[in-house]
Length: 85
Image 1 (tube, rainbow, N blue to C red):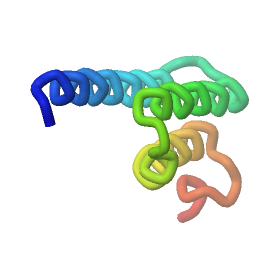
Image 2: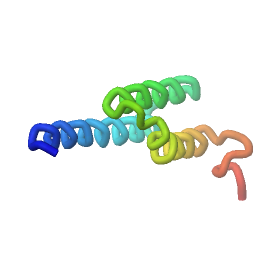
Image 3: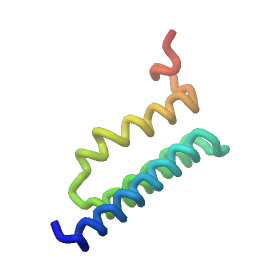
Image 4: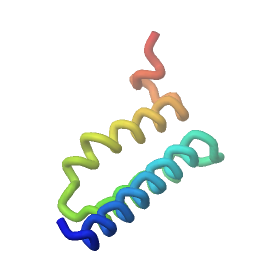
């Protein structure tokens, strides 16, 4: 990997961390409706896949469950983990 490729990879990784951290913070703290939260997650997914094309499976494995858990806990969706005792 050339230095230029390595720098590009590092830039994309920083952007990825920023997007995921920002989305997580907004989901946890902002006054959102469920549909707004879902739309935010979908917009984040699209942005992540623009940074890393073809990595849908990695997104679904790592980030999608995190965002689903936050939404479920935040909105107390019946049958979700947060709704169980």
